[in-house]
Image (tube, rainbow, N blue to C red):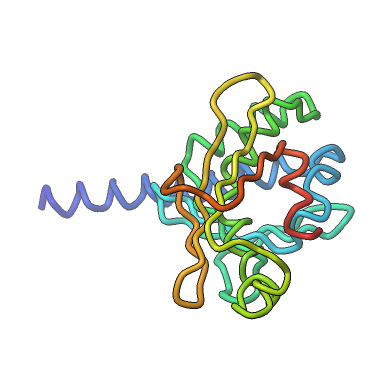
Amino acid sequence: MKKIILSIIAITSLNSQVTSSLHTWQNILQTPELLTYFDGVFEHLGIHVEETGEQFTIHHLGTQFSFEEGIQEGKVDFIVPVQLQNIKNMVVHAKDGQINPGESWRIVDVLFTPMTRVTLQTPVLSINWRRKLAGVEDLIHVYLINPTGGDASKHTLIYVKGQWLVIKGLHVNPRRTYRMSPKDSLKWPTS
């Protein structure tokens, strides 16, 4: 009987936390500054909260964000795994209605890997002969420069057996290196 009661308490606690994650995002992402900040970055963003397993989709409608429970594969631009701490950070970032350079870096650091994976799926970059024709190297290091002087976020991009791997950290000797600001990286998938 104790196990059943503890299980019910745990499930109830988890459900209230899941609801609060979606509810929190619904409340913070409606400022004009955040709409502008994410304009052109995504139209349909899948969110997966790692600790709770919650999944929902944020739709950028131009004048507002709308939210939908769950993620429909193939119907989102990319899926971002977040932690509850990322949600708390977003609340703090949005509190004053502006995104300063340090906050932008922290937001983009979370988005960077999923955005890069999606970018590398474009035909010019994912089909080997087109990639070679465009002069895109098969081993690349990318630095997301921290404007506050802190450590950069680093990724290695490797094209192997017809697909791109995006790995956090720097591995092997690159054939090309990119250094990007948060602002540059938000433009990168669409440029």
